[in-house]
Each structure stands twice: as structure tokens, then as C-alpha cells.
Length: 408
Image (cartoon, rainbow, N blue to C red):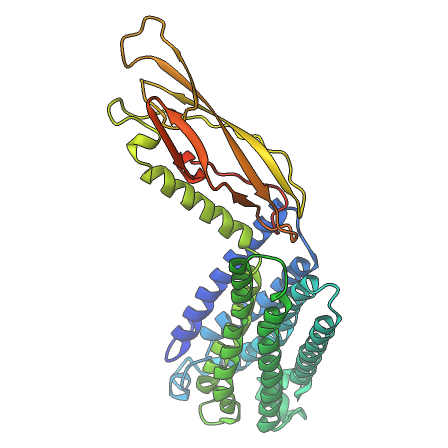
């Protein structure tokens, strides 16, 4: 039998939803890092964070089914008396998990910025100060939570209080919460806005800058959760309906940690987003290609095979590369991009000949100094088909060129 009433469903629902998202994003992070062989210190730190985060999840879910969020009137019903004790025990587990989990989660995000800011002492020192602030404050809060009641059992067991145990006044714990939350909010905002000046002069394209700054700026959402939690911290001094009052503290405290983990994971998923974007763009172009630019509307689908061979391009240099494209079209389908055609007609009826098209395109390519995606600059490519003489850009050929050296 469990107590699952009043605010408990909201606590359980939000915990389950955010936990699922956090673990999914972590799994995607591991996939991106391992496939690109770019596993770093910040990934180890986030992995370590999973242990206290699991303790935090246990405290929230266990509390939702054992008294946290329930009114005193619900707990006073016959058979529910024990959940007043169980609820306080799980609230202590939540407090320990909160302080223990938020340190490595925030540290992982900060270490990512430290890696980006290599060589910029002002930004490095600023981030070191941020790290020192939230690590020290949360360690102090964790120690106080553990010694708030002596013995620790006195935090939930009234018998321990009667046998000589004692706890600090409730307002003292509330003050520690206020101080800890204020430091976490301040460091969240500094961490969120630090990438803006850090990346402003980096030699990468504007869209990449915006995406990185936007992803890191999502950390503001975690600080907003902390701001909301401040409103409910006063419930810690509520001795009338204590377990119901602390339900909002638990909900928003868990949201702060889980959103922080989600943001830290999502910030590493740019390679995955790039793959999805490129695949979507390629599918869109193939779907919307008109009949005159790849297949013949009279003879059906074309079976096209393209091979691209491009040498590695160094950083900050310009090269001229010749790209050969071989198109094999079946059932008489004609490709518009042929400058040379070789038709093998071995007695087939009209419409059954195999057509092999060999095309050469001169591609001027350059790579940005930062090693980001290559820029392809092909103003015009000349091609001839039968009696037609046309000019068009590279996109009409359906070329998709990838270079090594993409930003991890």
C-alpha cells in the first residue's frame, strides 16, 4: 500500500518525464562522442553525475509514493500514519541527491567551456571562479543537511529526538537553501552568457555561433527552475502541512538538475543534428527534382549511381578539385547533365538502350581556418545535352560533398 494523492501525481509525473529525456539525451551523447572518437573529460564528469542523479530520482519517486505531496488529512487516515515518517526520510534522500548531483552536472558544462576557451585567460579565470563558487556552496549545503539533525535518523524519527537527538531550527535549513539557490542561479547565468563573448570572434560561420550560443544558453532554463523553487522554499518552515508544502520544492529542485543534465547533453549533439539536417536536405532535393533534371517522364525511373572522389583539403587553403560523376540510367531515361555520352545500342528496341553519362565539374573549395564545414563555391557549371546549351548551379547536379575536418 502506498499514499499517492494530492500533489504526489504531479511530482511523480514530472520526475518520470524529465528522467526519460535526461537518459535519452545522455545515450545520444555517448553515441556521438564514441562514434567521432571525441570522448573528453566533460563526458566522464557527466557519466559520474549519473550516480547521484539516480539517488535524486529515487528520492523523488520514492517520496511521491510515500507521503511527499500528501496533506496531513490524508496522512491521518487509518493505515497512513507511517507515511509521515517515510515521506520525511525520502525528502532527506532528495536533499542529498540534489546537492551531490548538481555539482558534477554543472561542472561538466563548465569544463566544456574551459576546453573551448583554451588560451583565453580572462575567460578561464572567470569559469574557474564560477566552478569554485557552486562547488563550495553545494558542498557546504550537503554537509549541513547531513548534520542538521544528530543523529541523522532524527530528521524523520521522533523517537530519536526523544532519546536525546536534536535538529536545528527549521529557518536555518531554509536560509541554507536560499544561499545555495542564489549561488546556483548566479553561476547558471554567468555560464549561459559566457559563450557569447567567447565565440564572438571565433572564425566559424554565424549560424554555427548562434546554434552553440543557443544551446549553452538553454542553461537559463535550469536557473529559472531554481528561481521558481525560491518561492516555495518558505514551505520548509511550515510545520502544519509539511510534506504537502515541500512537494513543490522537490519538483522544481529535480527540474533544475534534470534540465541541467539535458542541456549539457544536447550541447554535444551537433554532429547528430548535422546528419539529420543533411539527410533531410538530400531527401527534399531528390523528391523535388523535376523530370527534366535526372529522369525522363516518358520512360520511368532512372537508376543513378554517383561516385565522388575528393582529396583531403587542408585548413585555410583553396584548392581546385575535379569531381567525376557517373550516372547509369536504365530504360532509356535521359540525364540532363551529360557533357559526354556513350550509348551502347546492341540491337535493342528504342527506349531500351543503356546510357552512361560521364560528367566533370570543376569545384573550387575552401575550408575555414577553424576546421568547420567546408564551403563549396561553384558559381556556374556548364553542361550540354543534345541540342540544348544551358548553365546552372551545382545544386542541379544533386551533388553532396563532405570534407574531413568538421568541427566536433
